[in-house]
Each structure stands twice: as structure tokens, then as C-alpha cells.
Length: 282
Image 1 (cartoon, one colour):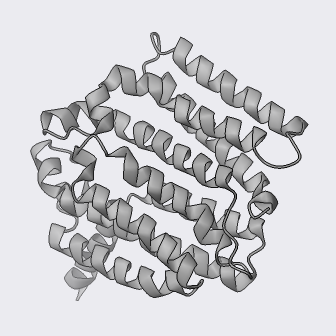
Image 2: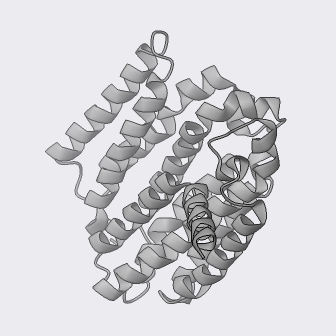
């Protein structure tokens, strides 16, 4: 009995690590906060959180299941499958189960909202299943992140579409996230033959480019909403520009500076997106 309980705890712990918990929780929290900002009621916010969480879990588990062979070859001991904490088969089962759960949870916000969200999740699965090794690896990130404002607003009464600038800014945020997320693994990816967009750029160019899609999103989120930018918007834009510039200037001495700058600018963009929640449907 004790051995069975220990094995179960190991499997649960392995699955928790294999789902990419950082990005999974970050995206879920961001979209849940956005649903609150646009005026979804408590039930609607809960449905959004559940749908996004199951979708992100399915994507994270799919990623680790697909990459199990490459991770083993690259000796990535930090990966649960490589470390023996959980089997690739179990991770696959968890990914499919989460995807199945995501379908009714997404459609509970309405057919249009649900289909938009499922399209974003489908794009992320397409990335895991092969697009990440092509020049079009950025497309699933753009589609996945760009779908999130529409998922949130289409669940409101009247099913309004979000403002164009919110969708474009979210898509740019996705492209920047793709570059920043891939940076640490570019050398091992190239050794394994994975040649997506960031890998083709190479570590140096990808590192330098990462803040720019995020900075473009900052400009959109400050300048495009109706009413013009206020003081807070200008300060946020100045902070995003300063962070991006610092990342570029310091990359020679601190190679991870552009990556850190990209993460910081992404945080500014998320704050701007949430701050513009009330304007997303105008």
C-alpha cells in the first residue's frame, strides 16, 4: 500500500512538472484577470479559468510527451519523463484527457467563444506536433495568444468581438513569448535538428529581437485604444522602451539581459491589456 501511494505521488508530481507549470499558471491567471476586467460575471470568470487551465495543461503535457525522445537524447535531466518520474504514455493520456475536458468547458462560454478558444488550443497542439520545427513556428503562438481576447469578450452578452488592437497586441505578445521561451534551448534544439523560427535566427539574433514584438504590443496598447493615452499609458510605454533599450545595451556584458528585458516588457504589456479591459469591446 505504501509503495502504491509513493508511486502515485511520484506520478502526480511528475505530471505537475511536465505540464510546464510556470507558463500554464501565468496564462491562466492573465486570461482570468482579463475576463474580470471586461465584465464577465463570477460564473463566466470561473468557466474561463477552467477552460484556459485545461487547455494549457493539455498543451504542456503534449509538448513533453512529443519531446520525450529528444529530451532523453539531450540528457535534459530536469524533464520528468527523462528523470523517470512519469512515463511518456502517462503524459500522453493526461494531455488527451485535459484536451477532452477543455472542449465542453470552452463551449460553456458560448459556441463562438468556445470555437475561438479551441482554435487557439488546436494551434498550440499543431506547434507541439510539428510546426515548432518549421519557419512557421511563430504562427501558433500568434494564433493562440491572439484568440484569448476574443474568447473572453465573445462570452459577454451580445457576443461582442474584441477591438482589433487588442487581438493584434495579444498576437505580438505571443510572438515575443515564443522568442523568449525558446532562447535557453536554442543550442540543444539545433543539435537535435529542431529548426523553428528562433533556431534559424540563432541565439544572438533571437536574443536581440525578442523585446521588439513586445515593444510593438506596448505601443498598440497605449496609442490605439479610444480616448488617447493617459499619464499611466505614457509612463508604461516609457518603461517598456527603457527596458528594451537596456536589454540591447547590456547584452554584451550580460547575455541574458535581452531575455530578462523581454519578460519585463511582457509584464508591462499584460498590465496594459488588463488596464484596457473596459475598452476591449468598444
